[in-house]
Length: 266
Image: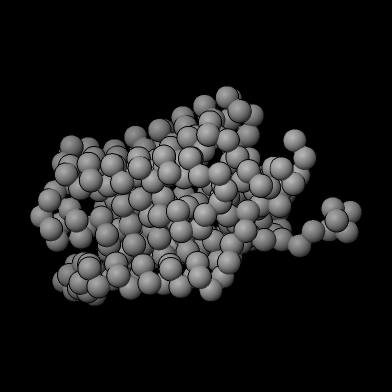
């Protein structure tokens, strides 16, 4: 398959700085939105998970059925994974009583299993190869596990580790900074760096979301979950409209941030 055809079939956006900005906003929205349904509406984690799981299934089905990349559909599906990830992680951590550490460990195993099966089945876990229903299924299942893991990991860092929401945000920001350093100054696999960054943005969004809506006595700002969610949604929509996104230019390794091509790559 030639490059033109590969690009036409791609269903995910090119990984650039604006991709990561929207991703962090989407993960933060997933935290505030998930908490709004399960806690503010008093529906509970199980009912909240069921609601968001249905939305997630329909969004993934629409994404797979679509023939081309549609920014609003793609980011709607990402938001669906973050909200179901929030309520599912809270259900596992709190309702099932396995705790943050137990939930994070279980979800890490599921995430590694998803990536391993994807690689063994199709030979690559690069997001630039997401151009067929089979790859898309692996892609969205892996993302769902990574979002859920990120929620559990973020909660564990802020609560169990005792560093708070602000401290958690600093920790995950520094870790993401190290990924950027590794991208520019090492030869570590770009695909590996992408998934590490993708996973780390979720706990960053989780602790930022908790910081926005948790009570002041718990270290938060006590903002309305509905208002915070609405504001984040406006930011996401504005970014999509102001900064047009395109699909990857090739099916090669995924890049954590956009990097200029060397002369011998042009």
